[in-house]
Every structure is written in structure tokens, then in C-alpha cells.
Length: 232
Length: 403
View 1 (cartoon, each protein chain N blue to C red):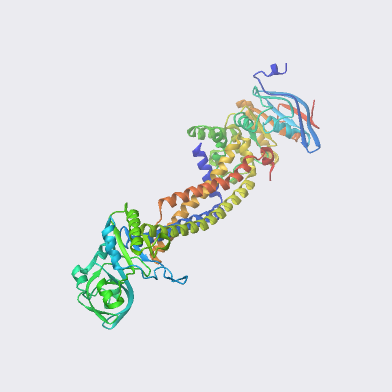
View 2: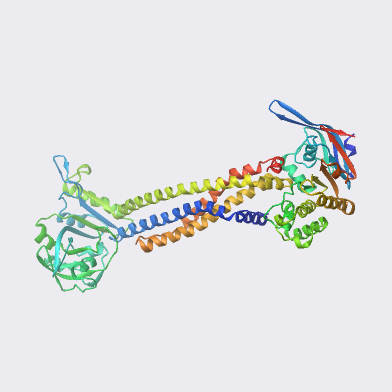
């Protein structure tokens, strides 16, 4: 019955997710029976205090980790029981990550950073630059910065490079993990504004993971987690 | 895609030039020493071979065995057992002899005017010239008439000429005193090169009849030199010579009073010594390659740790395990390959320097270059594998969190 709910407009569908870490004899359950879905084109924030399990949810929906139990459909595909390399394939094609600490390659140019996912996607060489430029324009980074080395940029610019990198492969979801955590309030606002615009104007599905209520309120819908459980 | 791997690798290797350079140095030194030592060894081997070959062609030498009296051996060649009559017997009974000559060897002080030298005097026959492939620079070799007429004529080598008359002097027609007996120089041989005490460049050849009459006063000879008609029958001739001499001397194989050596045996014995030496040198140099490889592994491990976060990011954006391990393996191989290239160049320069300044022949062979390339690439794979595997097995979540 659950499976029938995976209609095309549901880009993410989680059903009864549990996550248990076992280290030796110590068994820690961090997620309890989590079920939610996200529609295509939504702008959702997943929020909660630190230690609530939101990072674990982020890892599962980001195909970096698998649930101990339950099912997770991403873009119509069951990704709850895949091997490491199959998960890599999912991340490559369907997910764009934006991290708190940007994670850019320091000695590479902005353009080179943005087209890195296309290298693993084996996009033909001649298409890469135009795709990267399109993504940089969408992320709102001025053309004068494109050939700079990434460590010559300000924090806000770096995060926009990271957003462009997340966009470049036209993924099903963009997963932003505390994207404003390393930025001052004003720059953070600009970055959040960028997400909002990408969602409203370009129709990207955006999932924002944050512990700050101020940041979470930029989203259209908030999924609140506390002690590994969904709170309504 | 290879182009991607290439550009990633170049970027990574050039990111820390000093460290890459120092790591490469280990491989450079290793490969350079392998290349240059093999070149020197090979060169020595070649020169040993050619100097033995210059003695003559398809040569068989018969020498007296050890002189045994009451169980005490006087050592090889100390006995007097070969006679001139043996040569006549061999000429008659052995098939395949092209030329045969006795050698009565002695060392004497030789005087010409105010110069003197101590050199080897060889009393022999006309065939000797052919057997030992002697060519004349000026004058002539002695003739059968000189031998039968017991004429005191001498053919001298270029080194002897230098010692007695000075370099580039014309010795033909001059008189030399060997053991206070006057000889007329009638020929000067061309230089054959070679080294050691056995060089034919420092030697005086005289008719054996003269040597017998004035120096030994007996029928014995020091050596019988035989030239076989071809290389194929060398062994057969050698066996025949042995059989004939055993029956002439009334001995069996166990009591033989002579030894037979052929040139092929000498060449292979000498070159196997040189070859063993070459291998030994190369093996020692190989140890430094292993040390260099460990340096590469060490650097790659540091690299993996330093770039943990980068590895996490690459995995997050879709790099598979094989993508990551290929990247680090390619870096290691690039480093060793680069080291190999520089090492080959350096090794060739060292080999060239040795041949220029140490008058030692060297030859850098293609096989040693290919070997060096293969070995350096192999070291990259072997010592790059573990770090690359370690990188590829990193958990992306932990790697992304790594500070």
C-alpha cells in the first residue's frame, strides 16, 4: 500500500525508517519509525536540536548511508538496500550536496570545482563548461570570479560556487546541510535567498538541514525532529 | 575518462612540488644506479669478450698439465709434456685442423740501444700469424725459410716497439738483443687492444727453431695452438686432439698430462664472471629502488590523510571506490614513472661519464631501459596500491567530517 504512494510527484518517500548503530555491545537507536515524503518542487527544511538525528536523516536521504530498517524511495527508486557503489551512482545522478564548510578543491578554479561532478558523470568534455557556466549563473556568481582559485573567494561566494556545483548535474534534489553555518547573518540571507529563487524560478527541489529556526523558516514546510522521532 | 584522470593527476602531483620532487628522488637514484651499473657491467663484459676473441679465431690451446712428483702438484702448465713431435702427430691424425703452431714462451730482458724492457718471447711457426689473427703494421712475418734456416729474426708488438724504440718509430731492420743474442726486427704487428699481461701487443715472436736452439735446448713446447676449420667442428677437433695426444703419451683420461681449452670455453667462463658481477651490482642498485618505493608509499599515505575531506567530497558527488583508487594509483605511478624517466637520463649520463673519464667501456642497452621503465611502473603499482585502497575505502560521512 505504501509503495503505491510513490507517484511521480513524490521525489522523496520515507516509510518507517529506523537507524540503529551497533558498536560492540552498545546498541544506539538514533531514528524511530520516521515516515515522510517530499514532493517535487518543494522547499523543505528538516530541523531539530543537535543530536536529534537530523544528520542521520540527511545521510540517508543523501544516499550516504542506509537505514537499518524501513524503505526509502528517491525519484521512484528504492535506495534503502544498495551497495556502496550503487549509492555512489545515486548520488552522482540524483543528488546535489551543499555543505556547511563548502568543501571546494582549494587549488582549483571556480569553474573546475563546478564541473567536478560532470567528470564522474562522464559528461562529454565539450558540454562541461557550458553546463558549469549555466549553473554558476543560476547560483548568482559573477563572471569575473569564474577563473579565480576557490580559496581566493569570500565565504558567501564559496557557498554559491558550492551551490553551482550541486546544480550542475540537474539533480532530483538539492540537499543543503547547514549551508549558512559558516556565514554571517547577512551573507547567510543572500545564500538562502539564492535557494529560494532556485526553488521558485527554476523549480528545484530543495531540502535544507538546519538547527536554526530562523534559517528553517525560509522554507515552505518544516519537518521537525526531536530525539529521533518526527514531531508534528 | 583518461583525460580527466590525467589532468587530476598532474594537478595533484604539481600541487606540492617540493614533496613530489623529494619523493621522486629515491626512484631517480635507484633507476639511475641500475642503469649505470648495468651499463658498466655490460661494457666490461663486451670488452672481456672482444679481448678474448682477439686472441684468434676458433682457437684450441693445448697446455701441459701439472707437474706431479711424489704427490706435490707444481700447478697447471708446470710440466714439460708437450713435444714438437706431438704437433706432427696431430697434423697427420686430426681432421679439421686449419693451422697448428707450437709456442715456446719465455720472458727475457730485451735491449735495443739504450732502452730495455722485460717482455714475453714466443718461439713459434709461420702458422702462428694465422691462428692468432696477427696483422702487420709494417714489415713481414717470418717465413718457413726463416724457421728451417734458424734465422734470428723477430716480429714485435706495438707496445714492445714503444718501449724499445719510442712511439711511432720504425723498428724494421733494427737490431734487438734478447738474452744477449742479436735479433733483426723484420715485422711490427698492429695493435689488437685487450688488456692484462697476456696482451699480444707486448710480445716478440721468433721462429721456434731459434728459441729451441738458443733458449731452451730441448724438444718441449709451452703451448700448442690450433685453429679449427670452423666453429661447428671446434668440439670435434678438440676431442680428436685429446685422443691423439693420450695415445701418443700413453696415458688415459685420468692420468692426462695436458689440458685442452677452446676459445668458446674461455669466452663463456670470462663472460659468466662478468655477468654475475653485473647482476650483483644491479641487485644492490635494486635495493635502493625498493627504498624509493617505500618513500612513494609514505608520501601517498600522507597524501590520503591530508586529502580525506576531498575524498569525502568526491564520494559525495558520485565517485565510486574505483574512481578514488584509480586516482591515487595514477598519482603514484606518475611519480615513479617520472622518477624512472629522470633516472634513465641520469644513469645514461653517468655511464657516459664513466666511459669518458675512467676509460671503461659502457653500453646502455635497450633492455635495461625497458627493465627500468617496467620496474618503476611496477613500484608505482605495488607501493601505490595500499594507499589507494585505503583512500577508496574511506566512509564518505566520516571523511566529510574529518578536520
